[in-house]
Length: 294
Ligand code: G1P
Figure 1 (cartoon, protein in one colour):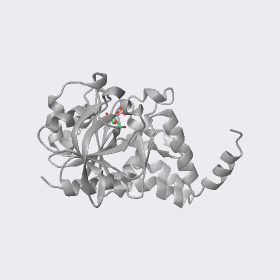
Figure 2: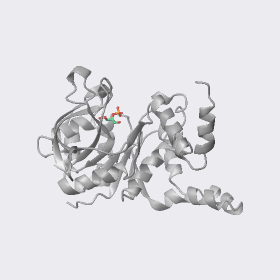
Figure 3: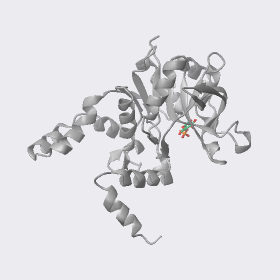
Figure 4: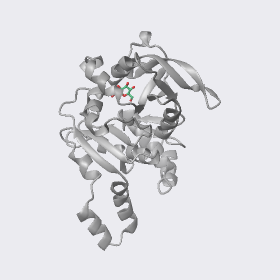
């Protein structure tokens, strides 16, 4: 089995009910943070981490995602004739850099089910999973950090962060022991157990799984074996729990800031902070915010 991770799977078939009515006729992955669709941030992170092969698991009503990563001849032509070189480069950039394949998830039956749909396209090699709702700003892209850990331990690696008390119930939580790595005593953990959306009283720790995973193809066998779990859905966390019986799995407390763009407040926070960081918008936007009577 090759060790190098060449492919990243992006589950994108969810219904986006939290953003209705905005998501009635457009995928939530296409909602923009400032001027870039949420999913593009994730795709760029994969690219910056050295992964060019993108597998997007789509469903009904998601064709805007496919159009977005396609060449748009009419638009490019128009920008070219109008001499808008900067915009042309932006529009061309992303579709030029990635190889993207699509696989359909006919019904939204859970994250584990979505990942399982990518089995044929992934084949017998390690791969990444990116949940684009989790937007991560980091000096070294979060996925790159995970890949570096994977290249040492040659095992599945999940991204985790510490959650404030009470918040853990919205996530997968891990029970784990720290492992010394690269001079740091508490970044890498060896997982003892993991549970999807535990009750606060039953959470094994405050370490929550965040939407970046490096997985090995054995996960597909596990996902084919487990029963639906939390919310009646086939859960990736449950698949990993089964896999844990036969091989070690690690977690990595990555460096960076994570925004939950799948939640309205998180989406707003990301929008404000990403706008403040922009060279073209940051200054005037900061002035505007300072002038608000809050
Ligand atoms: C999914 C996973 C969960 C993880 C979370 C991270 O949950 O099932 O384990 O903690 O993503 O964002 P979802 O947010 O899809 O309910």
